[in-house]
Image (cartoon, rainbow, N blue to C red; front, side, top):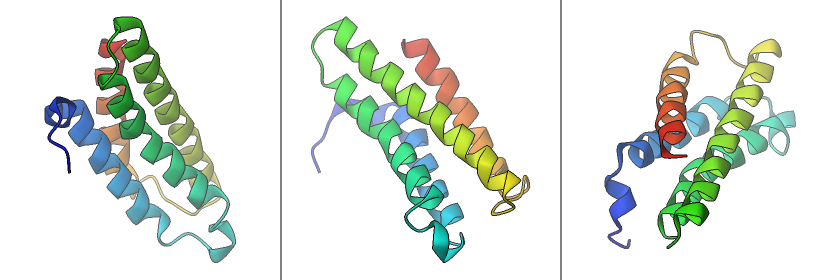
Length: 114
């Protein structure tokens, strides 16, 4: 892997941790959701650190912030999908506590960056 400065940021580390947690949570989703909600949640989660990384590599402040906003929007999308998963009883509030904590931390950090 490339040694890049954004990898030292807490927001990056926490967003990577969030992705791992989402993968763990969605492992037990019904097989019918393999290409549905499970896949959508994983893609939204992966989009968070991916856009953060892309933004960090941009030269202009305007460009960087645009990608940070996209990253934050993916997090909001993931939050909606978590809520749907709870409503469908694929997840419980108990199982999502760690994800909720991480999501709130990442959201606050990204908000400070934009």
